[in-house]
Image (cartoon, rainbow, N blue to C red; front, top):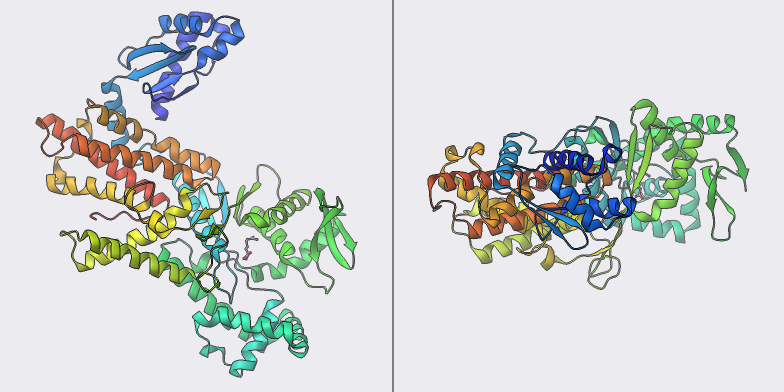
Length: 576
Ligand code: ARG
């Protein structure tokens, strides 16, 4: 689209200068898609106000000077002064052919930056909860999109692997297994955590031992460290397995956990003190960042060092900002973390800025998201009221997708193919439902809706893609030449216009960090593709030229759908 828009913008600029004089050069034409025509330009409204003339008159004067020969076949003035434009089929066809020949399918590259994306970041010895699931999916899609537009993306899994809970966890290992944590199984960890917690809350002697154990851990006691490492290792292996099943690009090398920052915390504190930012408050060392107050209007402290002398979550995050800008050289820091941590992150960013660790061009953004709700519109829980385990969700999604596939009973898919396709649909649906809703809003988890073959769902998009692939298989792909595109029917026109919007859709996500914009785009593209395939015969087209053109359109539609889904981390089966 952008190449098209660029050309139209230039022609409008020339027209505006010719009609109203040089002083109006550079006035934006305010172009947008229209349902009356292909595009509409709203520039006459603003210009009319500026010149004190009726916008319709302005539109007429402008249109009289516009040179759109060969590009636009119909120009109409509508309403108060909208200029409606219907592009020529030839121009659309040329643009589609050039996007199809472009390995990037019309997506432009941006000036590269180093971007750190902090995402997933679950806690050791705990199941990933709904917040971690969302962070994992949204973060991964953003990493893919930003990488695709040319940035150097550094993924950071800020694993929660340090702090007071490890005292009780290690004590509980010692109590239950005589120090042999190797017998702990991964799926037990959540239960294990709850048991330890219950003991900690109910048994003062255990609580005291746990506190001593934290001191031992922080002091580097070898036996304690060994047990701690075992717990971390068990969890890391479990998380890795989940990421692999999900097809999420997080690996062990991306883990940069809380304990990693441990050796840096003393210096962080010293430097804050040297900068005159550190204050004592109730025995804790804190920074008061201006503008942050409690409900009662009292200044809120960001606690760097707690009363017991230990460093907390905030200290680690401050060290993290510094590491990411100073050592990793990032200028854009993204934190894909649930909305409840909004204030914490805002304070961390403010303090880091004051300390000089986050200065322009470097900037940090909290990529916040809402919750997943159950059918009862309350927090998503299992039927028993427990945390929903991601591994169980994956199993169920795939099983449900398989059942739907069995019902459809596609004759062209054998057992092995069905298993693969069910996996892609199930996982795709789970990811898509998360990515397609406005990120900051809550959404209701509904299996039937997310797995439906119509509507804004992964299976609908995957099916549209598979249809294009099926036609191309039948035609033999040698017959596809992208130069052959012709745009004649309304469905071909709608498809061409949709295809040309891919670059803008991807750029929009890179800028706004809202994956749902790409989903909406892909849904519109899938709708245009489906309607094209249903109304324009491809293999039985009226002549060879129409057949070649429609094969080329099917091909590029399939490619854009697959590329778009891939940017969301979703696979597209060749047949469904
Ligand atoms: N582990 C944290 C949690 O479960 C999330 C960490 C987010 N990242 C960060 N740098 N604070 O709530």
